[in-house]
Image 1: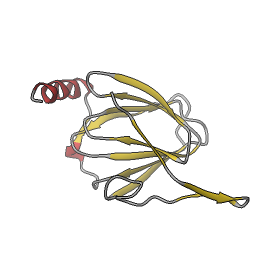
Image 2: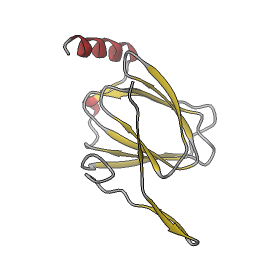
Image 3: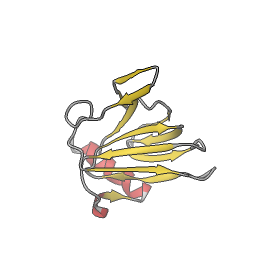
Image 4: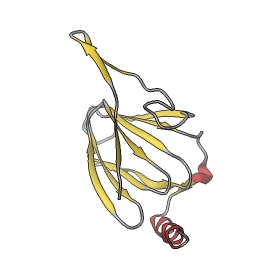
Length: 137
């Protein structure tokens, strides 16, 4: 499974740091929606879904959290803890987020507006769809 971590250019000096996010430059899609998660309680897991079409770039702008990613054939665990690095999550990738640091702020940029019909919320359905997708390729 290929995981894409996008290095974001960090600018700064003794006053602090800045990262600019620009669609079609360091964000590989047109940004249609931005949201962020914060205040996640200890021991809570979030996500538990995949998207049929949506692509997202996820950035831990503060703190850290772990990701469990599953493309239907392989699984990987990774730590996101660098505000100058984004995790690109393309369509048909099951995701779960866990082990949030107390100060974690997780920002998500998406290439589409919210659409409930794009979500796959059952892991069994996701596995079935991913097997069908791989058999037609």
